[in-house]
Amino acid sequence: MTEARRSSVTGIVVVTFCALIVLFQMRITDEFAANRDFVEYWAAGQQLVRHANPYDPGAILRIEQQAGMRKKDPQITFSPPAALCMLAPLGLVSVRSGFILWLSALIVSLSISIWLIWTMQGRPQNALHMCGYLFAPAIACFLLGQIGAFLLLGISLFLFLHSRHPFLAGAALLPCVWKPHLFLPFFIVLFLWSLSRKRYLTLVGFSATLLASCVLTLYFDPQVWSHYSQMMAGTTGVLRGYVPTLSVTLRFLVARQVIWLQYIPEIIACVWAVWYFWTRRNRWNWVDQGSWVLLVSSACTPYGWFTDEAVLLPAVLVGGYRAVDRGRSLIPIAVVAAIALVEVTAFRHIDSTHYLWTVPAWLGWYAYATRNGGERTELVSENSARPAEDAI
Image (cartoon, rainbow, N blue to C red):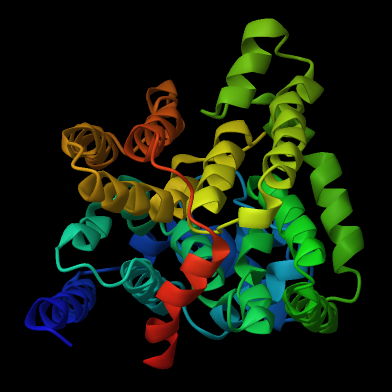
């Protein structure tokens, strides 16, 4: 390992360690933790370990208010039961301890993802990957206790493992089930790719992990799917509210009471994804072309938040590496990233229309950085990943 590469690894470790030290030095109280988005996941975990309904609004509100939440309405997770068992460990700790462990896991997830992205690119001798620690959606995850960094880790592990460890790559995608609507075009392409390349182990790995997760969740609450259906039926009003996505904005501009309008962009994105993959199936590369699928999926999602854009970090960093390779300026992404970072740290209200521009900006950056550059094949991806995987 060269001195520059050794310094990069050391930098990731040092930043992670410092972030964890700062976290443990923070004066986090029960009330502080209970008034973050994290509380909805913690309350669901509390219900699960009691073998109770994790979607019960009355019980959830009581647990959250006893922990110190100031809101008058229950904060209920909309995550489907298929992934709910991953929240069970939160039921064993207090809200403060759970929040500290949760933030620690978020920080470690981001650090691992940055290392994986850097390694997949051949461990270039620059510090571009360190900018991932300043990616505004990831910072927003830390501020609010949201799960975007866990989704990012699932995607990063898949990109890193898919060529040589297909079963593990499929299993690594389990966190994405927390918010399946963000990844529908991505999963469609994954299914088509697995069939066309005969990489069935990827689907087996994902299916086996998903099945195990479902069984474990049913152990905690045998009626969990019925409870989930009742909760979703009783919260249709939530879908009528405004969420800063292009799809919801389209509905509000055309006919705000017609909820199905916000699903039209995702349907179009799914059709596009099938076409995009099929016309490139013989030279498909998950890092390069998969980034386009993730970007389009985020742009067309029917429901999402700024914190969910953490999954776009691979596309943003890969765009940076491509721009450096082709001698293109990094000023555009520096400006975009700086504005987003100022916005999230100064205002923090991620339900504002001020966040509508970010996904188009990440997409525009990737288009600028990779335009007229040709497309890498899967063989290149496999060869570049081999030294990294051998190092594990």
